[in-house]
Structures are given as structure tokens and as C-alpha cells.
Amino acid sequence: MVSWRKSTYSDGNGGSCVEVAGAARVVQVRDTKNRDGGTLTFSAETWRAFAEALKRRLALDTAQHLVGSLFRVAPTQPSEPVGPWTRSPSY
Figure 1 (cartoon, rainbow, N blue to C red):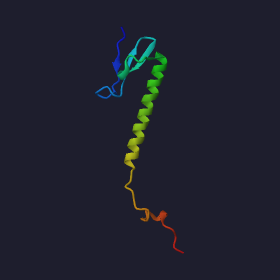
Figure 2: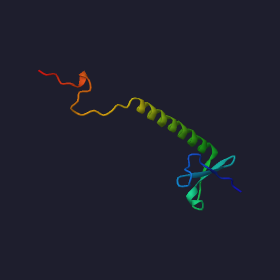
Figure 3: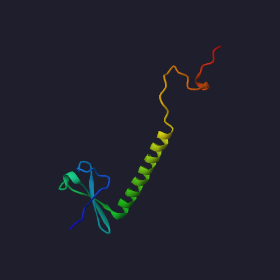
Figure 4: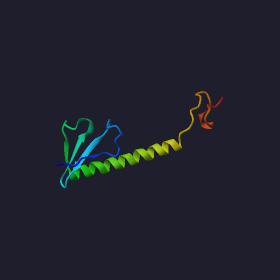
């Protein structure tokens, strides 16, 4: 009997989630909405590499979002000068 675990990132009503079952050498993944629709099978090494890459990407996306929100400025009118470097010299 395979023991399936639902992703911790899944929403509460099963709409957007996957389930994972693992053994020593393989990891199986299936769609929670369609449990009889088949599974994807990966070697444990491949799954580990995928999960680590995904975690790094999520961390990078989170960091970029945080930095972006720190430096976000309110939009200005196009005719409003933003600084001395945006003004055209009046010759």
C-alpha cells in the first residue's frame, strides 16, 4: 500500500494540489483532483534535485519581491520632473 501525502502548498479544498508518495528509490506524484489519472515517477535523486531547485527559486522570488516592494515608488505624472537629471536644459 502506498502512503500519499498532500503538498503543504495545497489549498484547503483540493483544487490546486498534488500528492507525493515516496520510497527509498522512487517518488511518485499525482494530481489530487484526479487520483486515478496516473502518476509521475521519479528517482529519489531526481526528485531531491527538483525540490532543492524549487526551494532556491522560491527563495529568490521571495527575496526579489521583498526588495521590489522596498524600493517601489509612487507613480508620478509624466510632466512632473522626478529629479534634476530629468529636466531638459533651457537654452
